Length: 343
Ligand SMILES: [Zn+2]
Image (cartoon, rainbow, N blue to C red):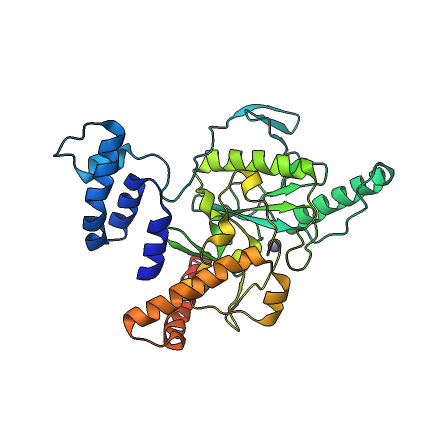
């Protein structure tokens, strides 16, 4: 794992115990020694007495939540299931009747990718009620037929299960993300897909999202994070993860390339995370991507470029040389993922 990425992640972890645990997991012994007295000082300040022989593993076991996770979601559970409708303890209602099966996912879910449907939208008014309902229904039938996502949130804020959660949905295509544990290549295997009935707009103009969609989005994210222990920083948009392996550019799909309301959905401001496709795998971007994206998305691109430059300087490589090495790594991992698919 590139050093600069590790350091960046560590700086973002506010809980000193989680930070220590993260650095230890990365095998950053020197960094761990540097952090340890500081972490102990803070823990001591919080709890007054810290036994001098407290061991790192004991501290680790007392840490809660995943490292880098700003806020653990509340516990959410299934309250009742009746006639294809599910009610959850946080008020979420899911219309599950008609959900389709696909090939089972062999690994547990580690994240969520948010999409826009890019489907036709009717004007949002009482006068177009029938058309609004027809378009939403048509979209649901279509995405179930294509097994495109796990959930669709229509414009009335109704959450529909599209593909069974334990199965793969075909939502992310060529895609990359990374957290403090591992790098993910081909996110369909590990990430759930949630689509909002909505259309992208260029730049900083956010796709239209009704208040009901925001509300349901928040409840659905809470439920999925609670159920699978998903870190907030692994809840990201398609534009942040989508890549084109042929020309090594990011943003093959640009849905939610700006304007995704992370905070309103109870998540961290994830556009600021250095885009792993750039920082970890040397991908680049083109003017079309620049035009399609908003300023917030560029925070992550610029941060990733900065990490690449730092890493190349540290290793005495040119940025181009480092990119080549990282891209080779991407193709190795992508090939491994393909082999797993066809045993
Ligand atoms: Zn998408």
